[in-house]
Image (cartoon, rainbow, N blue to C red; front, side, top):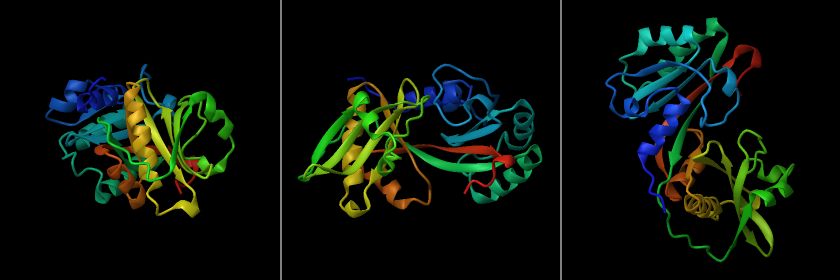
Length: 254
C-alpha cells in the first residue's frame, strides 16, 4: 500500500494555493499568489471566483486570490509569523482590510489528515460499507447531510454506517474533493450520541480510504470540541488551518 506523508499535503496545498510545494516547506517568508484554476485542486464553494483564501501551514501562511488584494496583503504580511496569524487580533484587522473590497471572513477551520490505518473494534455494532452506487439511496435523507453532500464537483465516494438491529445509528461519508484527497463528514443520530460511534465509523472509513490509495482528511470548527475529539480518536493529526472569505452581499456567515 502506498505510504503517504506531509509531502503529499504540501503537494495538494500547492495546487490549491497556486504555489510550489517545496516553497511551502522551505521558503523563509509567507507565500502570496494570484489565484487561478488548476487541475487537481480541491473542490469547494466559489472555486472559480476566489477573492481571497489563506492557509496556515508549516509556520507560514499561503495567500491566494485576486491580484489587487494579494499585492496589498503581501506588503503588510510577508514576514508575519504564520504560526499566530489566524489569532483573533489579526482577523479583526484583516476584516477591516477586505471590507472596502466588499468581502468579509466567512470561516476559519482546522483540517486533519491520516496517513496510517488503525485497528478498529466494532464494539458489537455492525459496520456496513456503502459504495458510490449505494449512496444515491440517501439523497434527501437529512439524517446524513454531513456524511453525504451530493455536490457534483466533490462526489460522494464511500460511506460507513454503524448499525444495531438493522438500524443505522451513525454514518461517516467521504467526498472526492480532489483526485488524492477525500474529505470525511459524519452524522450520529441524537439517540446514539455518547457511544463513540463517530470515532468508530470515521476510523473504519479512514482505513478504507487509505486502502484505495487516497488520503483521508477531516475538517471542523475550532468550537466543535466533540468533532475535534473524533478526529483525534480516529487517528488523525492536525495538518493546516484554512480561512475562506465571502461577499458582503451574501449576508452574514451565521
